[in-house]
Image 1 (cartoon, rainbow, N blue to C red):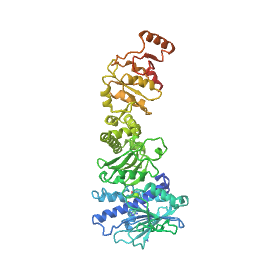
Image 2: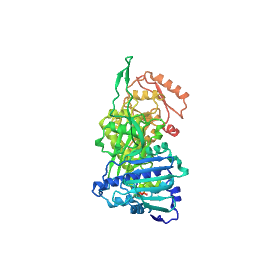
Image 3: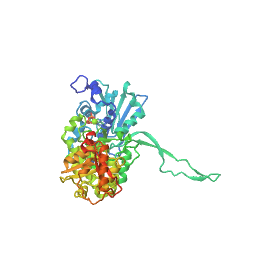
Image 4: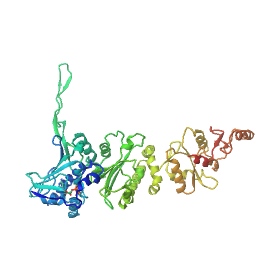
Length: 559
Ligand code: ADP
Ligand code: MG
């Protein structure tokens, strides 16, 4: 038996860890399961390159509650540790064995998915435990070791009779943390943090229908069919999917696979996503993930179901602010990157070069996807427009790169249900809708009901009227006016419409010139001239005989 002091410079680091290391005590479980996963993946790597004689097999990580003993066990079948390794890796706070491993096996292990790197994760156990034991047997011939520490800098290390390869961590749960002895609480944590980790995680057992058993159907006395009761079997309750969709290649996946992964991510979500974007880069940074465009509705689930950020399949957070451009935070899905610095403030994140690159990569991928969806099936894209326009318009406003790319797919719907791209619209109206300075005037309506007569009157003159009704439309208009050359927008009930050079002057008024003059004088008397202007219509359509408009600047002032 060895006794010694844990190698730290501060007198007692544990109270510090408990208070400050992580604000969320619950992450201790994520950290310990990450270590168990690393131990398993390291062994996998060593056996694959012939550096371990051990048989890899089908290792499982087990989480077990001992309510009576007030203990929580995390057991793995990974590479284990010798007593020397425990001294080296555990007793040296802030020395990361994960980093050391990656350094040693640089090239061959770079895709091994090893999680740890700060060398602090293990000590998060002391946030919830008053005493921690490690019983571990290395994959080598080294004898098993038993380490115990009660949260003071003193530890004991002795021999153990464990023969099975791997490590068992035993947490003696502290009085103030007994919630972590509740099955429901642990279940909740496992499904939050560990749902997609790469090594199977067992938590208890469950009953399922015996797949080998087909119930017999017999006829009862009354002639009714009686089905024999289904035979049940007890199996391990594996809480995770070790091979989630985003870790696969897009070519391996069908549309249905993406949809079923969406349900896996958001089990409470009934609405199907509109489409997905598979992210996959390894240079100049590592990033995988799947983003989904949901139907943009006003339901409250919108707020709840957010993009989740993972690091090597370990859930980190659903606050992706700073990593994903703001206009895309309305999407759902998963982003997984080992290159996002996590334990740092958000403002630092926004300034980080790698993170900036990630954000602009995501913007570009989304723009590319929208473009290809538009090109592949325009009709379908038009149908989805109402559900996706808010994201696209918001993106056009907030990201200049996206604004440029959006010309390829942003749509401008008309009051008649047609959809134009900007170029199409431009070509359609460039000869018919200009003012005397040759400026293009784009007419639009924002409400089909209240602006009905104005819309009809403009249509009767052969003008195209757009239907722009999203909440940010006035900002979008300003953006377009300042970015595109020589254009202005005019709402159908604004007075700009009067500045349009009329192409078709042949329409004849139903009123005589004299009647026209009388009507005009009359109207001008009753309508306040400083607020509105009156135009008599020369038109043979069913449109109104006259229109009252408001100066555009006055209208915009009110918005
Ligand atoms: P990190 O995971 O960032 O390296 P930790 O504090 O979480 O730091 O763990 C420290 C080291 O202890 C690990 O790198 C590893 O070498 C060792 N270790 C911890 N848990 C286990 C385990 N279950 N099996 C084998 N080694 C482990
Ligand atoms: Mg760790």
